Length: 311
Image 1 (cartoon, one colour):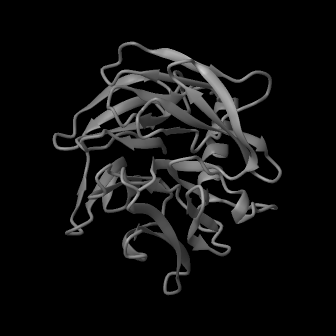
Image 2 (spheres, rainbow, N blue to C red):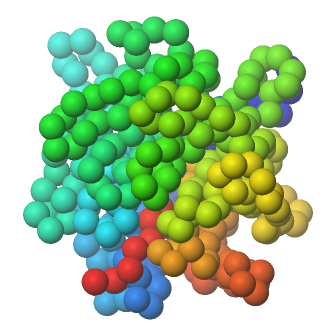
């Protein structure tokens, strides 16, 4: 068994489920880009949408355990989680929820007793999450909730370990996800797979984790499968044309749980690098796919999870 890899998995999951920080960015220091709305902050604690001139706080407090959030293509719907205590059973659960930006209102859907990943469809009509459920035995499945009707459907089993990221295709027909093949036996490198939502069929695209599907549909960017992820790569959804985009030197690593955010025009990437592991703050880099140039835009700040055009 690759002990370093297992340690990485534990660290990655820990980053997802426990956002406990010794320092908090001031709202005026949140990342902002010209002409952009960014989903940023710390889920359950200081989650916000920023523009060049404003900050909309979505979650505020000390709700330190949360699933990573997701933003619809137009920025109108945010998928996130609310931490709930079930007194009758003496346990804590996560209520998966959406926030309507126009209505400024939360709506709760399913609950999780086992932590997983969450992703809103580009058109904001569906929410997907990956988890194992007692009433759906056999392993991890991807559950899709129709946000209008509340109806939930389940995929076939996609694996027997934690999902390592999820991202919808632009047309909402497929979901890219990362999955460990087997942390307890070789080979143990995670792979990027694609689920066809209607049929339940899956195909393998590449070795890696934390996929991010481009708004154009042409590329899936992802993090390398190593235990110290320091490379961002991309590949076509059919598995062709794979290439390395960025490699960090030394001991630098990208954020295990939310490394890659596409620009609305699919021309650039925002990349979250861990800046200070003690305060859990980040460097945010802008990578231009045309010039292959990497530019550091922000330091000692909070991570970014979504990017839409400013309306």
